[in-house]
Amino acid sequence: MLECPVRLSKIAPDRTRVELAHFLEGPKDANMLRVILSDGLMVQGLIVGGSNQPLGGWLVIDVESGELGFAPPANGAESNEGQHG
Image 1 (cartoon, helix red, strand yellow):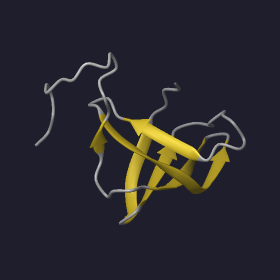
Image 2 (tube, helix red, strand yellow):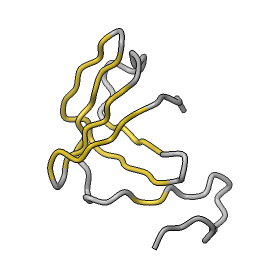
Image 3 (tube, one colour):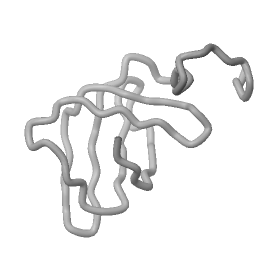
């Protein structure tokens, strides 16, 4: 897992733009991205476009839902703490 400051913006009902704070070193043929925010909200989808520059870049991903979902707990246990309703 890589930690990197990001900014998310919804650019269409099924598309999200992920702006990266620095160059992203990763697999050249990656086709999916998952972003888990510090509060446990998650967005993921297939990569459909992007740009990777030395001082940052961006990716556009197709998402199944226009809403952010909750990431499963890291330890595999179910928890209701911190869930937004």
